[in-house]
Length: 401
Ligand SMILES: Cc1ncc(COP(=O)(O)O)c(C=O)c1O
Image 1 (cartoon, rainbow, N blue to C red):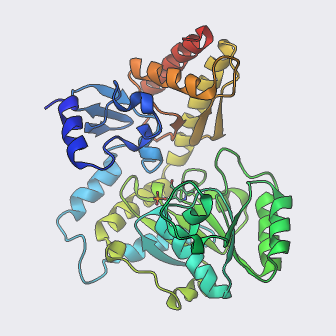
Image 2: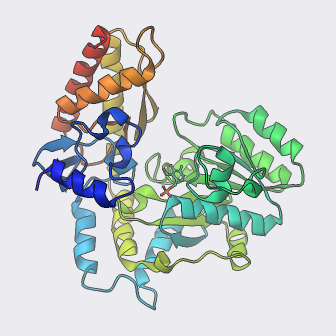
Image 3: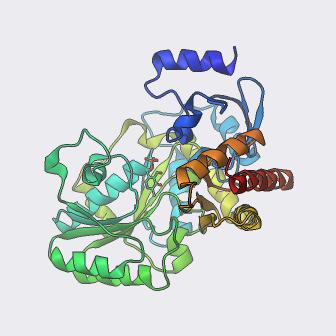
């Protein structure tokens, strides 16, 4: 069966049949971009028609090593002989928790979950149980659960009664955090921050958050769902030296297998006993076998440095191509997590630029992405292919069509 046939079958039964990265690309939903993969190796995917693509987004972050990496493939093969979900724990759960305690500065105790959203919700719940307070000061995205989404106004389906507890601030806007902490004095349970995204934290910003949280008697939470292992082996806390009370980990921990964790200081984590945080697949032993292999590999090899070097190669290819064609587009963010940013230009707004950019990537055998999450497996040929595609895309943008 062809790609087109599978799309038709998908449309009959799936509520949202297109791939997540094309959700915001209406011009591509019915067009030439692939929806399904039949093969995955390194940074490449093969679609149902047998066409091969370079993937710079890697499922939006989890696949830090690459698809079908020998380290995680061997762990899956070995563990597949056993059951995944049983009535008992598997020792790999302890070993992964030990690795997290070794690698992540704030981690003294660990509890596992499946999604980043779970870990963030658990963190907020623990902070509320620890302090007996409700208010959360928040910067960044923390998942799809009600405590966070109700406040954003991005979507329907959340009770109005859930609003009024979460107050947002921008990364590096210290004055805003101070003002919020003062306005809600005695009520702040936690400050939760995504410590690096399109911006790195300004020098001193995370340390200042630490001081504000301490002064307010609030729990400091780093949402490291993206930054853990991608920015640094110890996450943003390893990178900055600022140690939060709790941290939410996910994505890169198990190279694409669904697993997340809440880690933190023992006294704060003990509040888990007072609240409720439980799910059927919390002790999925296959996930632990994969994470154990992945974390050992990250600790014992130069994988994280390799990923950063690949990310820098992508950044310089993107920025260099834009500059050569006289355009102010830039790759923003840290090396292992870049956003392709298209500023407003006369006659060519960012959306139109992005659409033309994505079309050209596709013509050059790349998935039509808007961000780059570099992986260890990227080859020199992959990077050269990306650079050529960026150059062709900016040549079209310069022409305006
Ligand atoms: C910083 C951050 N926190 C939390 C989440 C939610 O994670 P998940 O989608 O695995 O629930 C995401 C997802 O992209 C994220 O980027």
